[in-house]
Image (cartoon, rainbow, N blue to C red):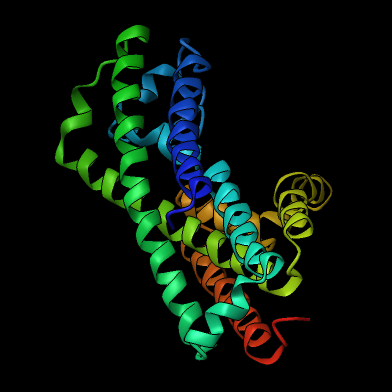
Length: 253
């Protein structure tokens, strides 16, 4: 947790949320709304004046923050094997699965705090961008807006936690930092979206897209409950696969 790379990654998480907020307002069409969904990632300016406008950028950047956490967790675990430190760890703590559970609890706690910081920076940026683009922020401070803030924060936290679990499992299974990072980036960014273009139902089944749907509150086809249940299933499967590999494989292999 004290490694410089971890601090840099948490800073990048906040930077991505801030950048996403800037782009959400900068790219919004200032013409009349062409659709009625104010929670869309890039709604027109009138929709940004709804209670969802304050958290739009934070939620829109969840895809990139999720991929960042997947890569970070994969690299952190694989590095333990590459540097040989995991052997020393298990000399002091032979209960491997307990160590893994504690590690994931620490990562989740750090992630929860980092997301609070990212949201605060995103919200401050949204207020500034609203003044620049002339967006009315009166509805941002209502009870409905606060409920939206809490809901979106929990959705992003759950989704990024699932990404972190998948990344940890990837590191435990592959054990090579370079390969684990490469597989994680290629799968979650270009490959899943290429498959999505060829297979319309990919959004409802591929893990990275499912986790993204959880972060953004669901989709028009599956709603929210479907992606959430499938995401939980994927997270459990990744956790079991990673824990089994850790418990049964020689750490020097």
